[in-house]
Image (cartoon, rainbow, N blue to C red; front, side, top):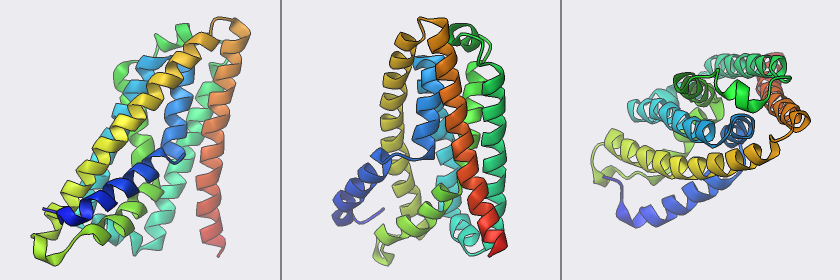
Length: 212
């Protein structure tokens, strides 16, 4: 188990990092604005599912391994950028469809998979787990992998609670804005723009590393 004396500092750090805006929260807000509170909550759950992969990787030492291989980091960034770019294109194509109608065409499983894949392909999360979690472990408190697993699960739970609140609030706001057709189209375009910007950030990071 992790050192309980370090737990308050860890929880404070997790709270700050979770609340700070980032790619995952931007994705949840964008989807919730377009498709409503249910999609926002499903996206939050999908992010948590993606976090399970990160927690497992950290416990097994894979996050540290990835951090030590720059080429692997660039591949993850490239894949994440291309995926978000694809989401931007599909959202633009449906910009003329009101969110109420579009929401019925996207199953809960598909919303979950999209969010989980977005989280898994976020290299910043992998590197964060590799650099951050080990600072709150001690050799005297048992196996390292157990401590990393517990700390990762705490991070996952805090993130799930915050992301759920974010998705719920953004979804209700989007539902209120989507009463008119023009507003619904604008919400879709804002969503597509958000995805495109996130894609450009990852692609720029990957390309800059290759040039360097």
